[in-house]
Length: 285
Image 1 (cartoon, one colour):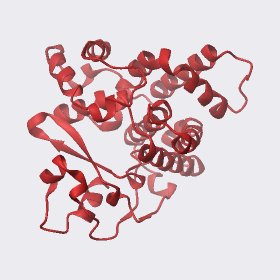
Image 2 (cartoon, rainbow, N blue to C red):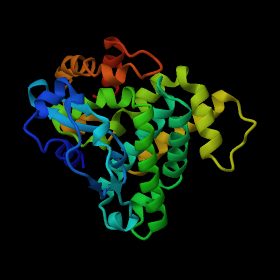
Image 3 (cartoon, rainbow, N blue to C red):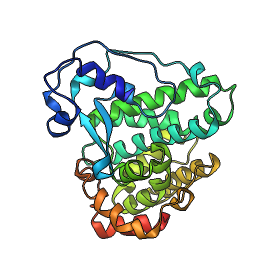
Image 4 (cartoon, rainbow, N blue to C red):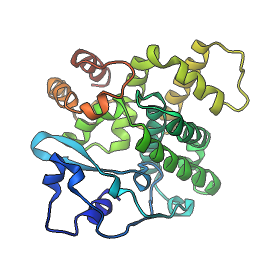
């Protein structure tokens, strides 16, 4: 879908992809785009981003331009009815990260929160059956809609530390984006928790339909953290870079690459320094 979005602005000789890495706003829409996602996760069908690999920097970079927002979108849970659990789970956790990151972003606002909270509700309450039961079409439709809403939230808010630290993993090691996000989800959210407890408490009140509203902010925050952890474990997504042959000797390269993703790092409620990134990566190496 990112390729299709880029194609919609590249039907011209006035600029190329490399030009857009330096100045993405050079681009103007040339042809209308219709996006039909076949995984419920990236939210690309709702965003103005296209992620491209920059091999010489071992990094993935986002080209951001409002002219890449798709003109038409079709969401149909039947398209992921027989999606392998491994693929369905990785993409769905990507959507989960979009929602929780947008909710806790420094750029969060009433509009993005409206979509991020609805996305969290739809995703967290449907992700397991949607990814593990081929007949759970209703859950799959809800997951699709949640992923779409999370994409809308990105356009108004933005992802944070999880995505910033995951980009080097995709750029150099070609780990699937959703898997790299899943690996970093808990370490980054635990690091952020002191600064985002109130946001997690709001998420609890929205997501846990029969929850105890008398719980403290700390208790609600811990519940959300434990639920995020449970989802990753139930879906059996890898949570260690050892599974992908990433050596500990590459730690400093990862830290340096992640520190270049300032577009997302600035959104994180709690500042992530190079030392912080190093400690987070150590947890998953």
